[in-house]
Each structure stands twice: as structure tokens, then as C-alpha cells.
Image 1 (cartoon, rainbow, N blue to C red):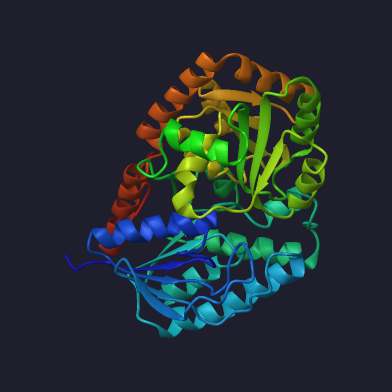
Image 2: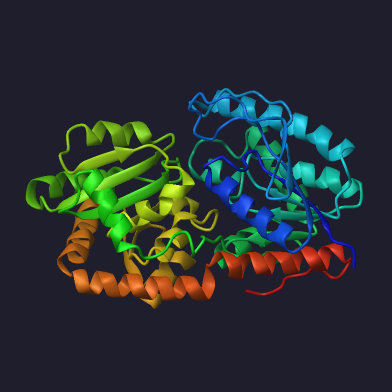
Length: 411
């Protein structure tokens, strides 16, 4: 059989540090390793928006051709800038999809909103369209009160989303909750394939973690780590209040927040008055192993309003590092049920007192925290390791490229 020609479309790709960029880069690399002909279409800007020079319009990496059509680089400082970058990327990428080499399979992520339309364009040229739904728009914006469902924008985005979900050859949901939401929105074919982490790069590494803790002045503290997007779908009010309480009572507990996003400013304001708080910008991928190992307890925050509409990608990385997780929020989600069923961490609501108790319990029971971390790594090896998950993707692409059924492969 001829090697499949695969087109991957997302606003961010290697070498960017965005979670979706890292995931799609892993997938591209592992598809190319099987002999697939892989091309990626991405923007030239950086997710972190740190003023870096634009990425080159074309390059090859690990046997993958990367095409970056022109787009604005206004950054993520406000909604207008984000929208400008997204729309200019969509317009430019449409030309690549329509007039570039034809693909057998096109994989589009759900960010930015409406990027799935590029998958429909590719399908007009005979490609099979796989829609990887990281989070469901405009449903998230409506749930967060950022968009009225009855507004012209809400109606338009909802109709676009429904068309994309109905016409995709296959929709990939990250868990059963998201799959149910896609089904209600009209998706015809759905497979549940979770996001992953690289279990070779992120692993239990006490030595590397200890070195980073010493560098940050946290060597003698129980470290509560939050690493990733400080986004609107997360809440930090209870976390910050609990950190303030613990600053006066439990000097051996420290908080380390890494990343950026719309809620970063409230974290910065709180950290300025707390002696037990450290802040870092996004870290390069080669430092993530040590970073995740530096945390004794990994925070995962999710607003209850967006339950069933997204799944935090940092969860798999925490398990890979062999560290217990503390899920804040996410009531009635499969994620919460899994954490409780597998005993890989703790769960609490967005309540400072409850959160403080959970952190104290983890800090005062180090043996139990280590046991939950070990169970987490075992769960990761069974369910979330990169090699395991991308192998399922290779199967999906192969079935679709071979004009097979292309239906759900099962979880």
C-alpha cells in the first residue's frame, strides 16, 4: 500500500511551546516514522507572544515539511489580537489547503475556532477529514459568559461547529464526557483517544527535580506545582486564598506557577505578597522533565461550567512524572472519577478551606503521596503514554487513507 499523505493543521506547531503544538509535533514525528508523508500547516507567530522573530515560511524537521503562510503576530494580550491572528492564519492556510499538494488524510485541531473549515476544504479535494477536538467552541465561550448563544456571533459559530462535526469523517474526543457533548452537537463518527505525554522525556526523576528546586530556593519545601495555560477555563481564586493561608501557617509548603495566559495577572498580584510563591514563564520542552519532577503535588484546575467541553492536557504529564494530582473543580467529570477510582491524587471543589486541607494532607503524608504518584505512573503506562496513543492514531490514519471504514477504533 502507498504511504499515506497526511496534512496536519493547527495555528501552532514545532518548535512552539503551546500544548497543542507539542502534541501535534509528537503525532507528526510518529506518523513520519511509520513512512507516512507528513506536512504541517501552522502560523509564524509564538503562542507565548514573547516578541520572538517570525518562524520561517518553510522548513523540514524530522522528515516533516512545515509550511507557515503569512499571518499577523499580534499576540494573545487581548481578544482582538487573538482574533486577528486566528483569522489571518485561517485565511492564509486556506490557500495552502486548496492549492498545495493533495492529502489522503487531513487532521485539524479545534484551535483556533473555525479551523475545522480547513478540513472541509481539504475534503473537497478528496481528503478524509479527522477533527481532533481539544475543546468545544463556541460552547466554552458561552459557558464562561464571554459570548451569548443568541448573539449573531454565537449563532454563526454554533452553526459552523455543527457543520464541521457532522461532515467530518471522524471526530476525536479526549474522553467520554467530551464525546457525549460532540454527539449531542451532531457528530456522526466519534473515537475517544486521550491526549498523551512522552513517558521517556517526563518520568520520575528525583535528582533532576531536586536540582531545580534548589535553583528556585524551594529545596526544603513541599512544592505544589501548576504548569500550563492560565486560561479562562481555569479558576485560581481558591488556590490563591489557600496559598495565602498556608503562607502564615505552613512555611514548608511552597507554590510554583509556570506558564501564562489571561489569568496570569491575578496570579502575579497574589504572588507579590506571598513568600511561599514562585513564578516562572513557559519553560522549553527540554526542561519539562525536571520541572514536572520538581512538584510534589500537581494542580489541575477546571471550572465546573466547562465540564464535558475540554480536558486539561497537563494531567497526563503529571502522571508521567509519577506525582499525585490535585484536581480543583471539574465536578461530575470522568477525570474526577478516574482520579478517585485509581487513587492517583486528591479532588476538591473551588473552595479555599477544602483545598487547603487537601494540600496539608498530601504534605503531611509523604508516603501516601508517593504511593499515589506511583499508581499514577502505572496508570500513565497503561493509558496515556505517547507510544501507546500515537500508535492508535497511526491506525486511524491508515484505515482512513486506505478507504476503509475509518470508524471508531475503541479506547
